[in-house]
Length: 451
Image 1 (cartoon, rainbow, N blue to C red):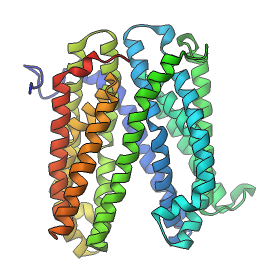
Image 2: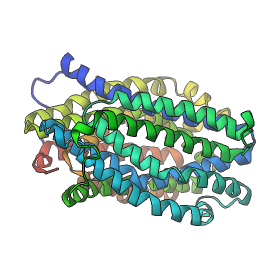
Image 3: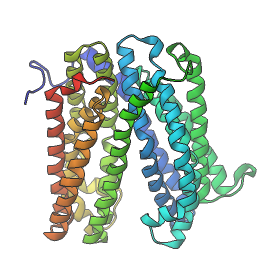
Image 4: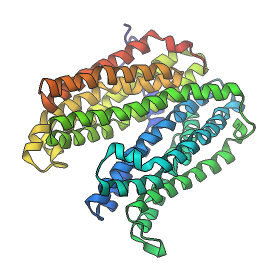
């Protein structure tokens, strides 16, 4: 296996580092703000009591699973847009966006109708408490009305990220968050003459904010993307096929990756309630702290796609490693407090000394996982930019479902090593995951793919 380019320093050169950060920082800020707004929503609903809060949590997780079905549209549009951008084919840059928007409507409308109809059955698969489910169903039905808007926003985000205008994403998402907070407060509590909808008001407020954001994305694109072919004509059949070919594996991967966490919590439930509580904190901390890695990976997707459009294959390969090195440093700095002060970090979420003791070493292992995962996070996204979506899907799901989850059951339940044993198994899985993506990247077969 070949290694990073000879002579490569610990960090990319200043000009390359600035270009990576210029693309990645707005994406990272937008993702972190999304996590913050979820906490604000939880705080607003939490004042209504335990049952509404639990219902919103269950409904939100169900919406997360459904959203995964259209998530791949973002990478499908971004990969093609970045390639056209690199080829300097200015008049065709938005053609993939047009195809993505059509596919978004065609996919989201029937899914929305099915979810509205079958919401009680779907939520019953996740939770069996009738009182919680009643809240969850009402909240989820309001949220799923926004699926068309979510799918189309993914397409717009993919286009603007593909032409390396990532700052637009941050500005629009901050506007959406403002609308969400104001609308949710009004609809939850019935302020300003609005109906007091309780927990369902949080779902209605979020849906309203998403349609407001979609309107801004559309107006911006009409003003600035028309010269690139936005809404100029119905895309050719080949563009639809290419967009679907790129989007479907990524959506499938996201759906089953999310389902994998549900299985992990089921396994923890076989060990005990304490393991579920600590595991919930550990997983949510790791998902929050890897967001900078994901944002850097999305920057790598655009840079690799642009370089391949210019037929600069060595440059595309170098961009991947430059972003990985930056991600390693960034994630190491974020993981340091977890490694050095685990009790203090856990004490922010857990107040039982026994739970803190249970989570101490697993949290330190989580800190190591975050750093070790950098190569997989970045190179997985970079491969999406090259059009290797099927490779990313098969690698991710094979290692998660055929390696980690069976190993977690065997180690944690059969061998009775509990939460700590599962987290050691997860550390090994993360190492294998990153090593596998490094091997794929170094073989360079992705450089021959057409997008």
